[in-house]
Amino acid sequence: MFEQIQAYQQILFDLTANYLEPLHGAYQRLAYLAALREAKSGKYVHEGLSRVYGAGVVDQVIAECHEEVFERLLEMPLNAQGEDLRIHLESLPGTFEGNVILCRETCKDWIPPQAPSYFRELYGSNLDVLLELLQGDTSTARPNS
Image (cartoon, rainbow, N blue to C red; front, side):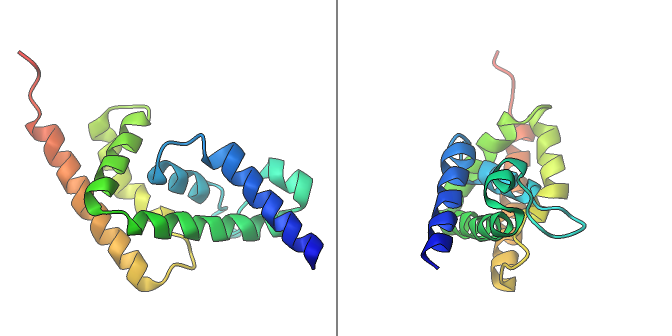
């Protein structure tokens, strides 16, 4: 039992220190963790960590980490969520406007599968408002004269 706890803690440390900490903000981390989840199987796959620790326990740790990042994002004030989302969208290739449109189509897929319905609804409504505000910012922005 103690060895399992140690392995769990080591995976969590490796995941956070080597893969999540270098990312900037909750939305980048959420997107990263969601991308590790295979659509067909629903399992989280991380080749590097799985080679060292085994796929089953890595799946479990990433699933719990995904939920934790998701919940922490929802605990942030809405204006902080908006700034975090703006920074994330600016960091992506392509135009900011195009990234806002793409996020409307894909960002709701970042919800962890085990998230309660009220968290899903809160995330969805927050995201809709934030994207509307960000899209409004881009349409009213004027080039410097």
